[in-house]
Length: 270
Image (cartoon, rainbow, N blue to C red):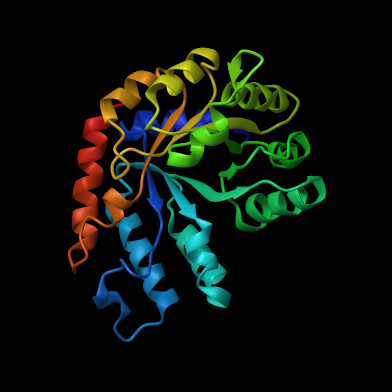
């Protein structure tokens, strides 16, 4: 079925009354100890992530899998990632948080890996190398490639807020993404951090229809109400990772994750 990413997101938002994306960042030092008993680390990671998914799927419209935490597991990491990805139900979207951004030929193979082999619905990308590093991902229909625009990390302002021809660099990046996406089958989205509401308002005003992936609500201090007000009526996914998945380090970790996810959904509204 030829259904765009934004259309899928809109349907899920309506069905679940939610815009919540749960980030899966399985740090071995924070995984509940009981999961590691009589188990390999990669198996424990799979059990941890799949338990989080099962506990939160009624309110999560998407799950964002952070590749770094799986790649660090070595040879077993990609197998673990595949298992976790397969556990995401059809009623939720999947995001490959890989932040790819290489030249055209390499980008084409990265895109094939994420969209054809693994079958993700979307990915995060770095725009520093320009058009030929992004358009191979945009060539895949019914997907959304979220390009880093104004990120929530402290160092994001080092480059992103630089003024270029009277506008901050993040606006130029977003303009290019919009332009490139018009030439391709896939959608171009923007990663917009919850910790800079002023920039978010600027981006939403300038790009009212662009899908936003918004990290930084919860552990990084972003206000749910402020974010939803700034994100406006356009397509949006609000990501929360640590505040949900590490709500407890005990045997009740999945139950606590569910409770925090539901509370976050209520705080965000829809």
